[in-house]
Length: 303
Image (cartoon, rainbow, N blue to C red; front, side, top):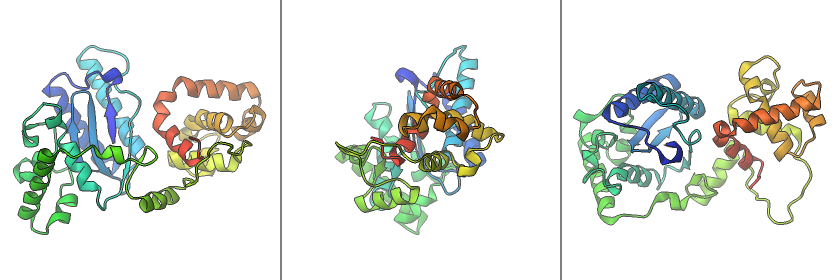
């Protein structure tokens, strides 16, 4: 997961800002049920390696980022957006890729010239991996370390050796190996993951069929992307559904190819102009839903 400052502007002014964001991350981890394996706060962006045993990344990122933005605006007497969009999340295959990515993230401060050694950089989880006295309770170090050795001391030694080797060898960025802009893993794993998420594996090429995407398919994909059942998404009273009706209208019209007349009864609207107004509302806040829309487009094979 990556979050960036708008126009590459800093997310932090001083150490107090870094400490505050770490504290907010601790609260978010306990509140939203994610597991942080790796965290590195740079100057204008953050990198996280997380597991999602039960957590909702959208809710987590929205709370964490908005809380930090409010803090920064109040403390530094600033206004406007702090973050560039919401966040970007890639899916990673554990076998053969997890340690490659964790090492690369931990070495970011060294590559950027912010520290000579990764353990010298304060705003990183690396020190806790090699020195238990510097570990914090809300980072799950054991998930990676246990895969290296059942002996905690040996596991920490091996992790240090892995990162120091990469510091010497300077392997290329693992993000160069991303498939379809989102998946880091083998071809077979990508296929299985897309099937699990309900994404199409085929691609639309030149001469792809025009025609509409069935409304049932559009509803199902949008519902999956925001974590609702299709029936709940169409609710005329559920607040979270009403919040996403402009998104559904946009996807159904602009991607699904449906008319305002098709969409109006779907959302309980009497006038076609109300559908147009809903789509306009979505477009004004499209940046907020950028990551969700990317998932929806992938699911509908719109590239």
